[in-house]
Amino acid sequence: MREISLDRLRTLVAIADRGSFADAARALHLAPPTVSLHISELEDRIGAPLLSRKRGHVRPSAIGEVLVERARRLLADAEQALADIQRQVQGLEGRARLGASTGAIAHLLPQALEVLRQHHPAIDIQVAVLTSQETLSGLVDGRLDVGLVALPQPPEAGLVITPWRRDPVMAFVPAHWQCPARVTPEWLAAQPLILNDATTRLSHLTAEWFATKGHQPVPRIELNYNDAIKSLVAAGYGAALLPHEATAPLPDKRIVMRPLKPALWRRLGIAHRAGYIERSTQHVLDVLWNLRLA
Image 1 (cartoon, rainbow, N blue to C red):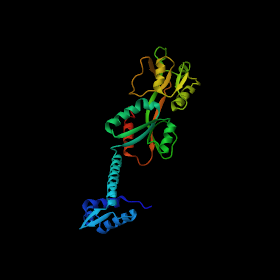
Image 2: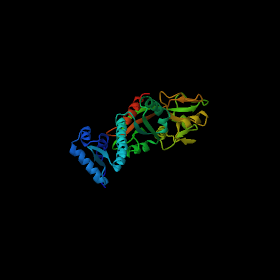
Image 3: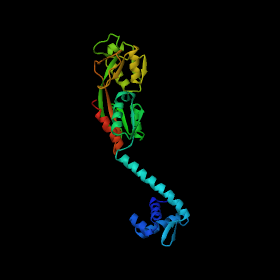
Image 4: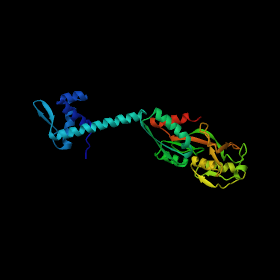
């Protein structure tokens, strides 16, 4: 079945509005034969006359009036769709889908969302809590536009992964414990522990840190939610190893933070697809990049 083009409908509406083929042709910047051809093609497609000519004036037929009414709506919808898309192309509005771990969402991402709300309120940021591997998979198959991932990551075809931040991992210890000024694997391995679960990059980092001194401690509990871990530390349930961003608020007064010996760092990267980047996604990338030293 042949489709009806918007150009043909636009010609019909112009004739209905102006009452003349010649006036419609001038308004549309078309040759008069082209206007006649558009109406002929429409009438062939519909199977009925769409216009009637009386005393030099052209009016829609009964069927033509119905089509003109529908055509006005279709043309208005098409214009609105193009205007909406143009606003997205210009970065005035749009959508960006972002994947990040709970660690990044707890402190870093809210800062970025606040800046985006102030400067780009019409951009809808959709956040998914995912592991780094899930985030990379979502970028590859098009379900995500931006990802915050733990580093290092192996190269992935079609993706750009840029180092973003390096934050120290600290020992979070109940304040009533007696602990050294710098916490070592030997000392911490002898304490009750609350650690990130084995699916996280931080779990691998901390396991390697303990292994440098030959330790493989078994935690009392494993979680993948840093605020919950801090709450358990404050309650005296155990000690934890967590990253600490420079601008993050100080922990509960029932918790003390101690640097590690040897030092340990949590490294994060920003990932996105290679090639063309939509303006809404670029705004998100720009705001995140400005947080690299925060």
